[in-house]
Image 1 (cartoon, helix red, strand yellow):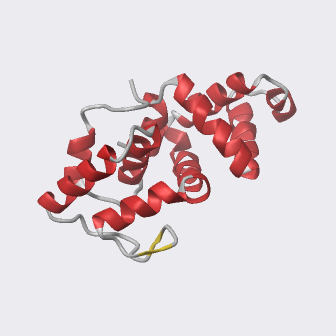
Image 2: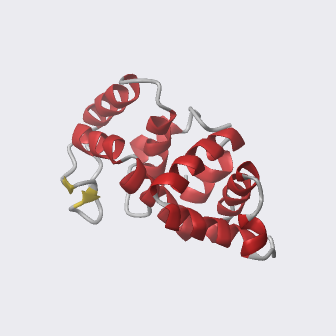
Length: 164
């Protein structure tokens, strides 16, 4: 799964929740996402910025669900977790044993852990609480181009919170 597919599978109400947090904690990135969504539907950015929040969030979700938008979808997911949900990101990286500095990986192409280590890390990460961002984080992590972890992809292929 790639980042554009994460947005394609995301429920509209989940996108609204995510975009609300992004708009508060990373307003510059949210504005860029709204402007990019406006351009993708051939609308003026100022028009899109004046729409109700739910309409803007859904436009962003739909525009990022396109194959051509994958680099932007990658960036938005990275910013969301690095700036808005760093607590979850660092918990995941620590749980799976990846070296990082404040959420940024030290290795550009991290090796997939042994299957039993990965399974245990995923189980513990998801069992901590019912925060929908836990599933989203795993999907966003697996979607990054530098992450080639077939066992994680297989584990996530069954669906989950925030996806159809």
